[in-house]
Amino acid sequence: MKNGNKIIFTEEQIKSIAEDLDIGMKVYIHSENNEIKTIIDLDQHYDADTEAWEEDINEIEENFDKYFQFDRMDLRESFQIMEDFLETVRDNDLKDKLESSLSGLKPFRNFKNLIDDNVIYCLES
Image (tube, rainbow, N blue to C red; front, side):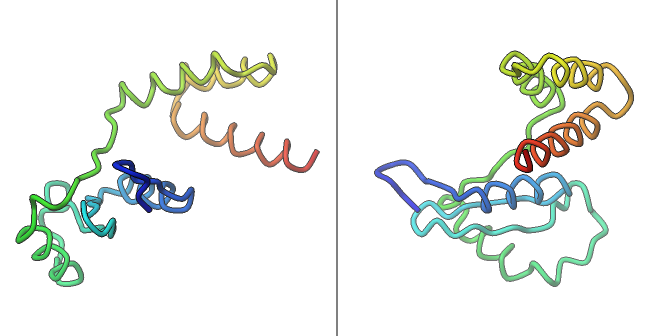
């Protein structure tokens, strides 16, 4: 949905875009009608069968100037966001666990799991 020159996304749309980017897809939004299109990223999946995305690929290529492409954050940016988030956490126990997760193996997965587990805990309390 547009609000002036801004596009407002629902939480579901944001989650879907992030998940698609995470699994190696390319995500585009049409500048006029806000239609979101997700196609396979051939840079990451060069030998993939593109038949399922052929119509969207052609549409985007033919009207490339009308589409905005979402870019996946690089690891450094993602890590910085997690570190910045730590500064907002008031629960010292949770903050310590999150800090530890960033210095261990699989920091992104462990950080996310801690957040997910604690959001559920907070909602149940």
